Image (cartoon, rainbow, N blue to C red; front, side):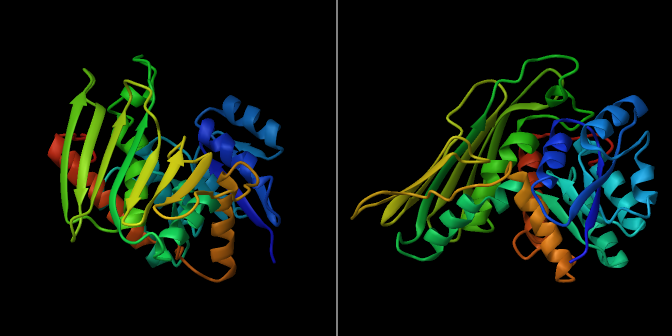
Length: 327
């Protein structure tokens, strides 16, 4: 097995999480990091013993790098991904994959054209506890899902330098927070038949509160909310015909999952985790490359398209438009 060399574009919180995650994997090396500031890149590079670049293009042009991890603001995902794909780099791009479905399709077309791997970095999909919960539902022992309730809410202080309130940086609760419970609904229930959404807005034009209900081909529903104005339970409850599954805090990385059948004893899904959980999605990239794949079976291009198309419809209903991206 070859050693896969990674380059990280961006130096923020999530970039550092991935840099830490790579330390847990064999046959992986962080080769370089890029920032728009050489000083910032050097600080990051010194911490992780890798090269530092003062512009993003150097990652794409570095012949040593096999995989580029895109950890820049949402507004730059398309640009940075296309740049790396065009240079033959495999790409793991942070969620949301891009701002809208049109951008995601351009990214997928570029990956296909250049015959390179591309995946959305939705780390929750690769959490072993989530995978085990899905196996419980798929086994049929709890019957069909009839209702999912999920939320993600954290107070985000209103400040000029807070990206959550920046429309230019594609802020708001939906794309940063609501995407997680929406992903859970998609993983367990598939494509919705109907979508009904409502939202509240900050003076900057981004959504501070968002709620939406998804209906499916039978009489089942998913009821979801996200907010930047309050600390919510940050949980998921999956109500099935013969029992319930609870994801306790947090929706994106549950500390505990409990299965409570209507008949019988409750049980904890006590899958032990390793690393910082981000390592699981990085390991999936390497596994796919070892198999010669250009997309993951666990989180495919089609999965990402369904997710972004649903987000687009929610934004259409609540009137959330990002100038320069939505035309």
